[in-house]
Length: 190
Image 1 (cartoon, one colour):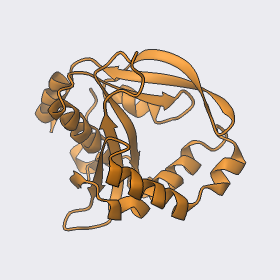
Image 2 (cartoon, helix red, strand yellow):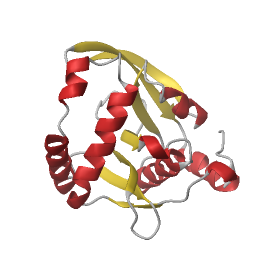
Image 3 (cartoon, rainbow, N blue to C red):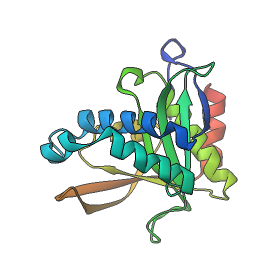
């Protein structure tokens, strides 16, 4: 597992999201989707993403735990939210893991500073608390974020296709077979 060099690491506070975080989460999601999925998802879909609609969706999703457990990363002392992620039981019952990371996004201005790694570790800790020993995350095969998951020790455990925004997209599932071991290695490298 590749670590993040100390000089490039930004410490954040990670906490459970509240419905009040919905708009900040939506902003990060929309901005990262537009940057990461340009040329992958239909241009019209990305242009039409609404901050108000996405914010409402996230407020309800967090309030009803529709996206499992949602965590946010914020700068120390109650600073702005710079990333978020969610996790829970696998959405696909045939998934080769006991838990799933549903989302993991870091604000474009705060990427490559160790925040994604800190969020992933917190999501894995949450899955372990839920009784999961392994995890999977699905990612678009063309999404450059897949290299982050590879750097974090994820291995491709499944491939497939899904339909989203009217497009047929190749999907990769990255898996971690032993969350406890991954967390122990992460603590040793910190």
